[in-house]
Length: 283
Image (cartoon, rainbow, N blue to C red; front, side, top):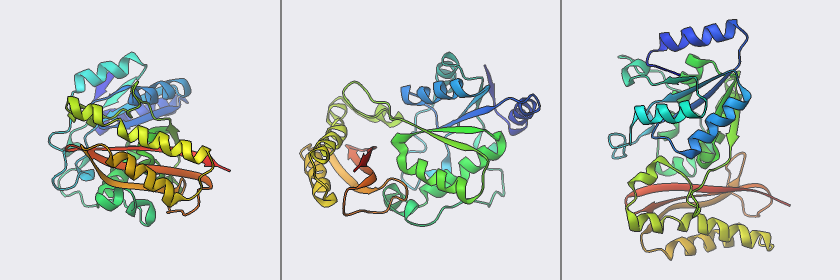
């Protein structure tokens, strides 16, 4: 496996792959990888000739006061992990390589899809996401790009962007990978202290409770949301950012639980903001 740092070098590799008729699978990450990321690499390995993982902590998707400077980074560790599960290339550019001096062009997706959920509390976040993903797609020209469903809104936004801009790449959404106790795997889990880590499982427990009442026949979205809020508030270390039940495609709020839905939440445990969700198809 090779670790490349420049656009010129990665394009040399991808152009050669194209000339030889090879398919390219791509996994964009911000590093400090866990089993969730590795599941994406494994899936890409099954479906492509060349597998590329980017490791780049993208400054434009962090707002003022967010954790850009403290975000965990360990390129050597991450490179070994993805090599072990079949990656061919790690692309780890500098900020200057991606955003050279004078860079002033950005990509933004408008509407409810970016203004709700995480977009409401993190203004500008998705502009940073769509800009970096567009840049990486232009650099690497993948056939398929792999994203985890834990970031469900991000997946929906990128799918919308790909459709709107006629990008020639298939977006592959892969299931959430969880710890044994149900906590969704996240690089930010490393911020949690011992008591906070125990408290954090309230997110998955609340979602499980919501699934259960829906299976029992509850169809009033407001009642299910109230159940989730009460469950999370029973944990003293938690502070809710949002709990929403929306259409899984458009992310528009719904009153009746029917068809494809996404139950999404963001909660601070201590100082650490965690997200989780569950996707359901309800008759």
